[in-house]
Figure 1 (cartoon, rainbow, N blue to C red):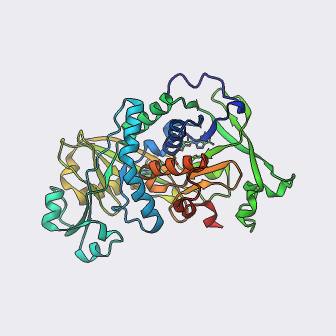
Figure 2 (cartoon, rainbow, N blue to C red):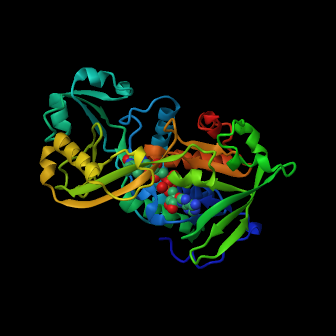
Length: 399
Ligand SMILES: Cc1cc2nc3c(=O)[nH]c(=O)nc-3n(C[C@H](O)[C@H](O)[C@H](O)COP(=O)(O)OP(=O)(O)OC[C@H]3O[C@@H](n4cnc5c(N)ncnc54)[C@H](O)[C@@H]3O)c2cc1C
């Protein structure tokens, strides 16, 4: 938890901070980037612990995930930027983030399956002997593999999130923890046509572009002590993760629940991440093996673990690395990925003047945090609005 910030009064609009709605990984990354570039930011965060940033496995895997098109390009640009981004966070916070470009292996039952993988051209082809060399003890099902040495991992759950929070505080970002944003208050730019409120346009056959005639004027919120107030505001970034559509129903963002667990393995038992179908194994430097993840869109916002979900992970461990079935279990947890219909994020200008979007990162938000911060902070500061990638991830593609 960032220290010494929640008791302070909220800043007034006169100080002109950008309001960051949601203090998860993406919100923190954007707040930090804005503050580094000299722009004041205030993070309004409902519940720190529910952020998917504390749930994720931390894989940095544009190639191992088999991404394609603009999403692959976005992921590759982020991957390139990550070492410098992590360096800034580590230097501002004084804390390590656990970044390791350790390579990721994707195993396959046959070489035909391997050769058909969308990102096969970016990886090194492995036969069974190569798989055994890269992943000692790998299960017998796997006959071929792809090694992506350029992919890696970061220890988001234990290190990156804490370091980012501290880096934000170091840069003067103000935090309002336990604060729920209840409503975006807008005003028509050229009149008072009530029917043009973007949150009322969803599913009504209107062109989303028409909705942009509203200007953000305030945020209505409830503070941790229960007090409700309206905060005038001309610029905000919507980073509420899987909950983003609750504030702006026009956005096609929905939760995809994921369950995880961890085991304590011997240090150095595994040096590469193993990205199997339905289950992956992410070895941290201290031997902790992070195992993920279920993908349950049908669960909505249902909280908690399920026996079926945990059995799926156990079956994945048995198939990928049989020896790990005897490693001591450590933790089990779950969270909600913010997904969109094309599984790619919404970045840049939103449907309301003054509202910027950084949401819908689905299963790649850790990978994409660095580039999302660069692009959205850049656009907000008037520097990156013409970046082709921002156009590719504009919300109106779902019109
Ligand atoms: C099981 C699992 C495994 C994953 N593994 C990986 C991985 O290996 N690699 C990878 O790149 N990505 C991974 N991800 C995805 C990644 O975690 C997310 O894409 C990323 O964390 C999204 O960040 P966010 O800031 O948008 O949302 P979050 O981190 O969820 O933060 C949203 C925040 O907004 C706050 N909020 C919501 N509504 C309001 C409101 N009305 N008012 C105020 N605050 C509000 C919430 O309290 C929350 O703190 C995984 C996700 C899951 C669930």
